[in-house]
Image 1 (tube, helix red, strand yellow):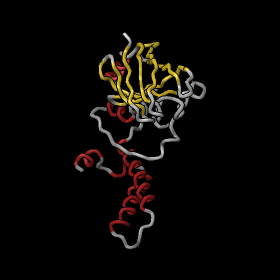
Image 2 (tube, one colour):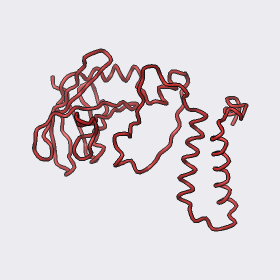
Image 3 (cartoon, helix red, strand yellow):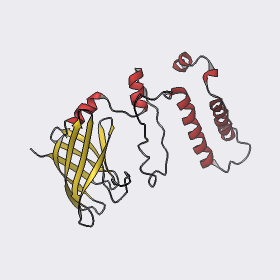
Image 4 (cartoon, one colour):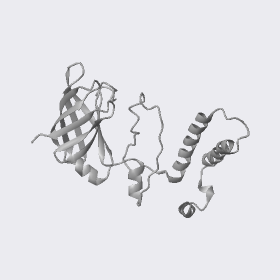
Length: 222
């Protein structure tokens, strides 16, 4: 509370809709703390309250300006078929630049430098949706110092050899490799691979398939 009072001494800095949500959350909670009648919609009330709290926190801590020349895209935008739930989190940073990086989930320079070291070819093995071993060759390549691309060559469930372009997304100490269709630039579940990987050492990547919970391993080809 001391921290909040130092940062927000004037409540009028909140937007009007935030004021409305603050009172609405209080009213919903009050119905259950001082229950005068049976509440028939606890799940609806809980979901509504979480959404309003997220809005309030965004008003307090949210970044009001976007980094120059950056396009911001939700990590879940390509997966509407599997995003049925919600989760909320709050992160802190000590500097303005770090705050923007945390808020937009942007990688730091250390992560970028580490990923650039993956350039080359890796032999991989993983479990498919049937629990069977599958193999492929992963290639990282770059056309500039700031741009890293990847593709995966393997045989799919229909035993058809394909070379799949991979989107790379960095998350703290791990990263995602997400296969997609060049025609519509979208990932399709059970058709394209989706790996969550981390560095075991400079010659090995380990992780799992996020869609099938199967283990994944890639070894650098010397």
